[in-house]
Length: 322
Image (cartoon, rainbow, N blue to C red; front, top):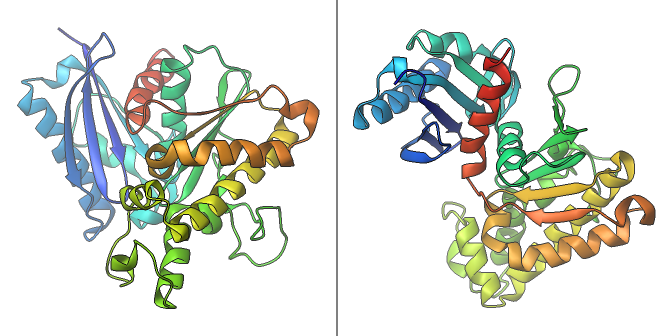
């Protein structure tokens, strides 16, 4: 049947996750391959194309059955032209990925920032589009966000809206005009949390995380969650600090924007939402002005990584209906 499917692709710094979604909005198949930036932008596009072709071949789907390929990119992108201005984790700059990927396929290729597309998925499938002024924040390797005003995604004048991770704050989570090293992302992301923990481990701090003392030993969200669950003092200290910073920043942003809904996601929140969310809400309450803050709903997304995949449906609806 023509135009029965959408293929959503979540392009990350470590993985390319593709999903085949049918016309009932069900994810019927997935393909995950590692991200390799060693061959530059061209190699990245080739890998995405291979992922899309693989999921089509495995499910015996032809191009005429695919409505669109919808791609979420961790960087600043123009969804109308397909140009990536900058995607630091992918080492890509000023590259038109839409044009490059379109050379492999006849079906339309749509592109959006990864948190924006996740936000579209959350808005459509978690809130059934019944949300007005919403902020979606994903906390993982970095920190990114998506903004919705009057129910519509706000991309900004030059498509940089939502770069919350680069806002300057001090170590207590309040806004700062000082060192550029004190950004929200460099204070409360998983990267920042792990950096702080490893620094203390190298100084001899005793912890259940001692095996991660080596710079070569990667500490992921799952390892942090296990340590927090066992009430490891070092993990609790740094996750509490990050949670307080997140809550404080969200409080300040709400004072500015008068939001009604804040949704948190990403690997860190997904793995430790039971620990983090009460601390985030408390710090939020302590930092926001009472009137704009009193009715704000702060929740963790239930869609997890699938938010970006489902967002491809909303992106296709927006761009293919024009």
